[in-house]
Length: 445
Ligand code: SF4
Ligand code: SF4
Image (tube, rainbow, N blue to C red; front, side, top):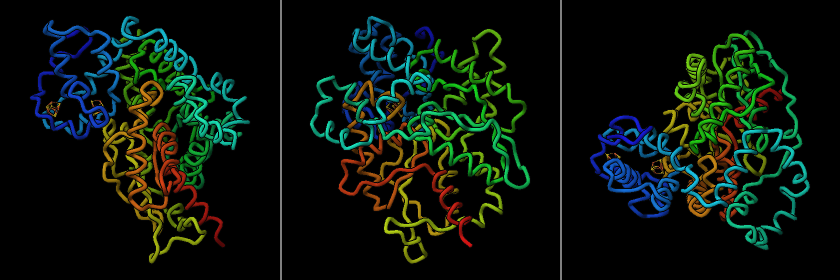
C-alpha cells in the first residue's frame, strides 16, 4: 500500500545501506537517524504499514529536511527521494501539524516573497537601515532576538538594498551584439531582482555580448520555487501558469534562461507541476522543455569568439591584475538545486576557466547544502545557521580570494555567514565575473 500522493513503490529500492547519510545536511547538524534520508524512508514505510502516525513529532523530522537532494546523488540504489519528499511536503502543511505561530509566519512569507511589488513595499522603508552602521549596531546588540528566531533570521539575511531593486526598468528586448546566434527569454526571479539586481544585469550583458537576443516579458512574476519547495501546490500552480502565460506572449524563443538555480529547478518541473491543471498540462511541459540554466545554455552554445578575445584578467583585492605567476583563485559553491537537482556541475566551472588567470578552487564539502534551501533558513534558523557557518568556513578555507555562487538563496546565506569568518570572502555570481572580465577587456585600448 502507498500513502495517498506518494508515487507507487517509491520507497521500495531503499536497502537501508546508509550511503546517503554522510551527504545529508540535516543529519550532519542534527545527528539523528530520523533526520536522515534513511530514517525518513523508514518512517514512511512504517506509516504505510499503519505502524506510525504522521503526527507533530514525525512531521518535524520531515520539516528538518532541506530538500537539497544530495541523497539522490549519493544513493547507489537509485532511490528517488526527490519524488518522495515532494509528495510528502503538502501533507506537512496540515493545520494540526504546525503551531498557529508557524502557520502565520509561513502565510506571511508566502504572501510576500513571490510578489516583488509587495516585497518592495515592505522593503522600501528599510533602505535607510539595511547595510548601514545602524544595522550592524542592532545585530551586535542582539535586539532582534526579542522578536524570536524566525524574525531574527529574516533580519540577518537582509542585505544592503540597491536603488535598482525598486524598479523594473529592463527593456522588453535587449538586442544581440553582432550577429544574432539565439533568441532567449530571461526569468528574473523575484528574490534575485530585489536582493541582488546586479546578477540579472550581468546575465543580460554577457548574453547580449555573446550574440544572444534576450527577451524579458514585462509581466513576469515569481516562478513559484519557494512555494513549490514547501508543498504549497495551489499557489505554485497559479504562479507557474501566470509565468508561462507571460513568456508565451513574447513569441518563439530558442530557450528560457534563468540565472538562479533554485528557480531553474522548479521551472524545469512545470510539466509535472501543471500536469493536473485543466488546460495547462501541455503548455507546462512545453515551457519546461525550453528552460535552461544560463550557464548550461552558454556552455552548450559556446562563448562567441568576439566575447572570448575581450576577456581580460580580473584584479586582486589590492588592485593588481591576476597573472600567470599570481592567478586569482575563486572558490566555487555548488548550489544543491543546480548540482543535485539539475546535474549541472562542469558548465559554470568551464565558463569561469575561460577568464584569463582565474583558478577555480574546490571546497572540501562541495556537495553539502549551505542551509539556505528556499525558506529553510527562515523556518529552521538554528539548523540553517549551523550549515551556513560550515559552508562559509569551507569556502574560506580554500584560500581563494572570492567565492562564487549561482543561486541567490545560497549567495545571501553564504554572505551572511562569511561575516563570521576571520578572512571573509566576497560572494559573486559566475556571470558577474564573466561580465567584469569582459568589461575589463572592452575598456582596454
Ligand atoms: S536512500 Fe539509498 S543510500 Fe540511503 S539508505 Fe536507502 S538505499 Fe542506502
Ligand atoms: S534532501 Fe538533503 S536534507 Fe533532505 S534527506 Fe536528502 S540529503 Fe538530507
